[in-house]
Amino acid sequence: MSFTLATWNINSVRLREPLVCQFLEEEGPDVLCLQECKSPVDKIPRERFAELGYTHMIARGQKGYNGVAILSKLPIEDRGDKDFAGLGHARHIAGRLENGVTIHNFYVPAGGDKPDREVNEKFGQKLDYLTDMRDWFRDETPEKAILVGDLNIAPREDDVWSHKQLLKVVSHTPIEVDHLAETQEAGKWVDITRQDIPEGLLYSWWSYRSPDWDAADKGRRLDHVWATPDISNAGHSSRILRHVRGYEKPSDHAPVLATFDL
Image 1 (spheres, rainbow, N blue to C red):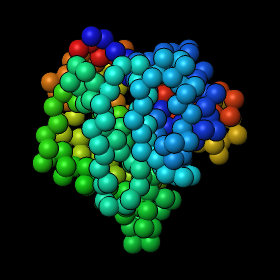
Image 2 (cartoon, rainbow, N blue to C red):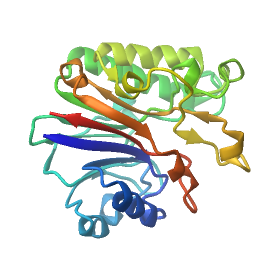
Image 3 (spheres, one colour):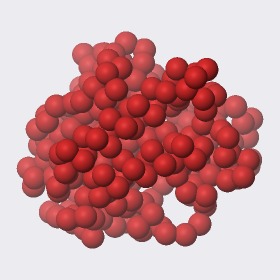
Image 4 (cartoon, one colour):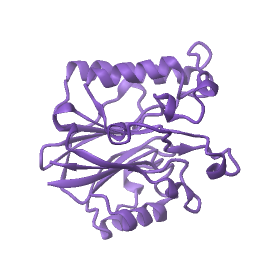
């Protein structure tokens, strides 16, 4: 069985329903994982997605904030969620495909503006969230699993437009990168995107604050596709759809895709 999976921080699934539909019609991934849906589950426009063949959905939501969803052409079983760091946020969901692959969809806290937990509670929450993820993967060693989502960290020097200028900017600080590395190591997760595209600048997010994001190209790779070692060799054809960032009234994130032959 071969299936293509996409992850995309949509920044309001109701506001950007037409963009989701456009993407599904153009690319047709078998599974689409969305983050920052900003919607209660019963308000997600699932009927329109079902018309496009995505008849299966599992989701966790809350009004106006956070929220994660998995839309699938393939049957998928709801495998629950975890409230990491006890924040009470809709930031994680898991689903299992009929081939036994479990998909974890994450929306890690952004962390606010100042990389100092003493003056910025949100930054502390982000670090605590990652620590909880790490501990969970140490206790529950994942197998035959894929982890995707907006992890809100660009770990490598070539995952940001300027490593030197962003060292003290939330999303690329050494403490965040170390926390993400510990989380990845705990689950023995393989970064599928960088397995396929090992060299070169690679971004999935461009700020709304830039008047011409495309020309300025001050991006960061905040969105990730990981897999456990037992299936990582089955992953291929990774790509980031930069042009989607140029849709009308877009999300500030672009979709990240990978295909798995399992």
